[in-house]
Figure (spheres, rainbow, N blue to C red):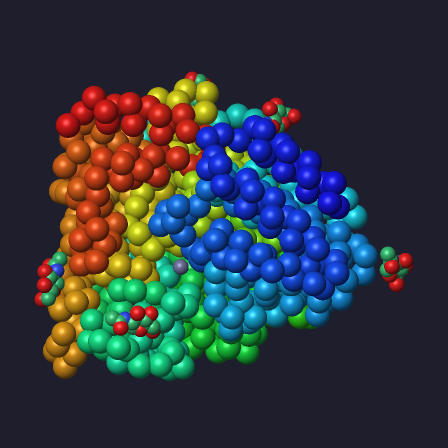
Length: 602
Ligand SMILES: *[C@@H]1O[C@H](CO)[C@@H](O)[C@H](O)[C@H]1NC(C)=O
Ligand SMILES: *[C@@H]1O[C@H](CO)[C@@H](O)[C@H](O)[C@H]1NC(C)=O
Ligand SMILES: *[C@@H]1O[C@H](CO)[C@@H](O)[C@H](O)[C@H]1NC(C)=O
Ligand SMILES: *[C@@H]1O[C@H](CO)[C@@H](O)[C@H](O)[C@H]1NC(C)=O
Ligand SMILES: *[C@@H]1O[C@H](CO)[C@@H](O)[C@H](O)[C@H]1NC(C)=O
Ligand SMILES: [Zn+2]
Ligand SMILES: [Zn+2]
């Protein structure tokens, strides 16, 4: 083991530059010290301090990569730590010992504080041990390569598989976009309902979610949790859920799409009971309040613990997600209007045709999320779902149906396993003439994404729209969207986004919420409709006229004061362009094209 660490160290030191001269020494100390501590139980006196000088603060929080300066030493840490722990497990280290070691690393590397680390490890450790014990040739390359893909640790992970894509398919030809004959679909996402939300609580709590009843008193009025919710790490109060539903019902619409994440960010204290309670409460409430069919998908926060999607043949009651699939099959069937249990029980996905010529395919994209440890055990098309998607689209193509795809995690997210995203993008290209719309959630930002033809990278063949979020987590105003849809082709014509000013609302708790229309897509961006061709044109316009990216930035946060106040400089604007044009992480073809255009624009 020591030898392995040494090899990693040598490889790291000799090939990684530029690197701070002091850093390799620090890293060497960590590797040696951890090895000594874990094998002998003696903690070398420098170890704690060294770890504390090389912290991976909050590395597992959603989107932390965008906010924090995580660098290549993180991959090195990952390899050293993972190999040490695997080695120990092979030597029959107990669950208790490994949990203690994990806790020591978690706290001293400032991943989270002590109670969060403890709660999280207690929830994840049986899964991790199952995977280690059932993967005889496991090493850190697979683990760090998937878990830390988003910070570039994936080299050499060998994740490379393909689904069977049916032959055929014709060049993309946009069909009718007729404003005269249309209907409306309401898109709602990411409630993150927090049963523990505490107005007057402490907004500055340092934990993954604040405004909890057990986080002490705020030390100033500026850090006091508001009446409805808070812009910091806070989720949606029950009051805000009710008000949002009430507001939505002031509109006329035919269908409602809900793109996932019901459970709050109190990730260190999830349980089957607590999650069941929140899921039942929200979906029963939707059934009671909405008179139209509701089409939901699962979010990465729904399982216990979050992000975990074990294969179906894992029978262990504690680890299995059977409870979740059974629960949502029961809660969703009445919302959708027919029994969708059969496929939901196979992996949380389903398809229905709510009217002739129109099909909805709801997939569970969460298994692609890199914090799903089960990818380490087997990364090949979890639940056979992408194959099912391709097969289902082929049927739809034969039957001349037009399809809307609903999912939670967008494929281009840096935490979505790149090979999964590649196969998904291939499906989008192959069925460009069948797919009329894609709806996603998860990032909590108002965003869209453009899919390109991989044989002709100037041609847009698909577009996905993010429903943003009801939760303000983080720095955003709560929102929802209403789409106009062509009644014949089911193409997306336009949308409006609605929101309210959370600063204002919290400052006058007894006043009714002042919801307003933030913008209408075709007006704000001066395009004809939401076709892939039009949004591709918009990307070119944004690269030329940077003021459009200022608007895009404000809309991402739905005018949320703290989000908007941060402002968006050139580097931020280029990131926006890249995010829109990247649907497979690691494939930067479009990102390079549009940043080059940006540099020539104004
Ligand atoms: C670990 O435990 C297993 C099963 O009890 C045993 O077969 C194996 O020899 C042990 N390995 C070591 C290194 O002690
Ligand atoms: C994946 O495998 C295919 C076929 O074996 C190969 O052509 C391709 O280059 C591989 N891709 C990567 C990223 O390794
Ligand atoms: C993608 O480009 C190739 C090569 O130009 C073309 O044959 C194919 O039809 C295109 N696919 C779509 C969906 O337009
Ligand atoms: C407020 O309290 C937090 C701990 O909850 C502390 O870290 C912070 O420094 C305090 N701020 C002020 C201005 O006292
Ligand atoms: C939201 O309301 C606050 C308080 O009235 C105000 O200061 C702020 O400018 C408003 N934000 C926006 C984006 O209008
Ligand atoms: Zn979410
Ligand atoms: Zn999510």
